Image (cartoon, rainbow, N blue to C red):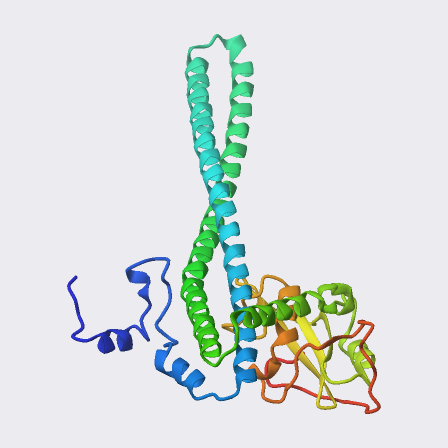
Length: 331
């Protein structure tokens, strides 16, 4: 209170451009992406292709697994950093007590110097200087710890924001899974078959050669060397290499063309563009796009990360691809 809006629509429209952080520091976010319940229901009810609904259910299941794992990773990191912050605060308290003790000792030394005999003054001055040097060292260490604590607190809050943002996403995906499963059940598809289908998807994902990073991660590979390795390879053959920008780059064949795309590493994770920089590792990113097309980022990349360049089943092609550029951040 006081309430400013006459309708929910007015409220939503206002906070499409204004952050919610003024009410809750962890909700530094705007109401950007509405989820239409009616659109989701229409997408299922308008479908008559059971195979497509099964495929969509598998995609939702994979997305749910990925999002829940990401949430678990954030949660684990949040707990660890919370404990780390608590320990650093205790260490700061100890530093404060030690600094106060040395300041008392220095004041006491100064008092002794005023009352000392001439032959005692030199040793007292030397001792006082040692105390001052030690105090300076303690103060510098305390300042470093304070700076580090601020950084960890900021990171801890960012994790909390990510967790808050992921919760509704995970819940929405779960509801969509339930709706797709219910649709299939209403069309006579048995629950066991639905469960078996999802299990098959997981097994196939676990058996991917992509789990072996040595099949696609080349730490010492230039752009031109990547192109030589990919010449003659079929669409979807790929590798990941360092980029001249200091980030990583994906090199992949598609439509008889070798394409290069920057992979950004941010505080939130790896990805090709915001707001999709959410993968905790390059391997997580590769595994996701092994089963999801890059077309969501660029219409010309109609392929998944299908074949790691050094995987045993990566066969060559009779067509020599051109070297091309894609619209999302090539390098």
